[in-house]
Length: 165
Image (cartoon, rainbow, N blue to C red; front, top):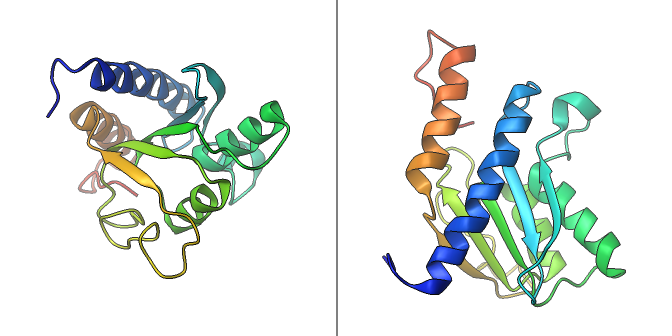
């Protein structure tokens, strides 16, 4: 990829922060996914980890929580100029929320071969149903993101194949 590219190094730094949030979520009993929103000035304006179990809320995915927080910080729903970083490829619900938020760039770590709705299973951003064309960069710190999820599932499902759900 862009091993020594300044932009890619910045993406890796922000993904590292998303991984830290995923650790916190995992320690709280949540599937360890973390997300951050960075504004056009390269400042974090929102960050979240999964909170479905804690909040008893099926929509409390890290991406949705971070997008909500970013909208509140900016005072509007349109997040044009912002970048969303997330450790796992978003599901269909999150992909829809991302498209509706108008973020300019989605950067994610590990592919989700079971439920990924950006490239792996579905391609929501490029579908006719999407009213926003989203730039996507995948695979940033993918081995670390994938290993974090697999390790978490191995600890909770010792007899399973430690898949990414």
